[in-house]
Image (tube, rainbow, N blue to C red):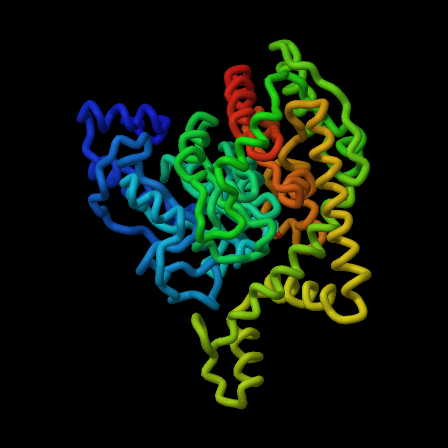
Length: 464
Ligand code: GLN
């Protein structure tokens, strides 16, 4: 049976009508992993079946794959790093509590760029994940393991985290759907902090409908995460908006250099399909959008340098046995325990926060972040959705982006909405001549994920 092709509702229906048991469903996916993971390396560890709570929830009994930076009590979580190789989560993340309550069994933890820094999953301590559509190419990152697992049919859906694009870009490269929820919609408790003002947990799925089901399950207010937004507050944003069908496109920004012409062509073809089905496409001006990447690569490393300070070899994780004085031990642990990209970010972040440079870099970036955020929120006073491609080109080959700056350019279209907090959805929009997927990227007003799902489902139906 082709269970890997079925959506969550269809799988749920099979469970309900007892065509299959929960354990059989779980074992089906474990079997797919057994056969497929050696060549793809999407999972760093798999688990055996634990008969979870049976509830009426649409995800009950539907197994999930989870990125290696989300805590499940007693399970290892390493964030793809030697630093946390044997670290066991001492408590449940908020999303783990939800999955346990619902009764969705855990298939395994998925590979990722080290500490979620990267766009290719090449920086993982466990080796790169391969793109199931072409194993010479990267699956994207940092949630490359989650995206590859779903694309290869090794999991019906997965959780990832997105700080600058890490759900949407790998979803795009693997031809699946990825949702970055609004900042504050899903609790970050128990997610290993990378850049705390940008990090969001969200789903990678085969369809928009599935993304909606998973989002609805995990978008709970959490009093233990001070940045989690209560539902009354969310409703205030939702009331203001948006029943229209106007799609804003930042044309000037799109037509800059470095975007593959075929990506733009596919994007404009997607828009004209939307136009034919009743949407109005308008040009919008977001004058500071092209500063978003630079702003991100100041704010993000600054927060990284602070969040990574805890990995000192004393409190948890890897500890070098180099027995010098305390400073020696810190240096040796961090030198051996962390990879190049993580070290690069720590150095960048420490630099932009250092006295004398603080105002020039960090504060200036914060000001621009506010400006960009304001421009984006203002755009939503006359459009209902913003659309761009998800990525500037399709999946690239391993080793192709050795220069860190060229890797950072991957985040061009995704990063602005981590800065502003808006929800964004990546949906496959066709294939290039090498059969690699293109994707379209929709952005909605804060806490208006519903609008994304409505437009996303309509777009998917136009692609059939
Ligand atoms: N590629 C981006 C970075 O390396 C985004 C990573 C992410 O979203 N976790 O920072």
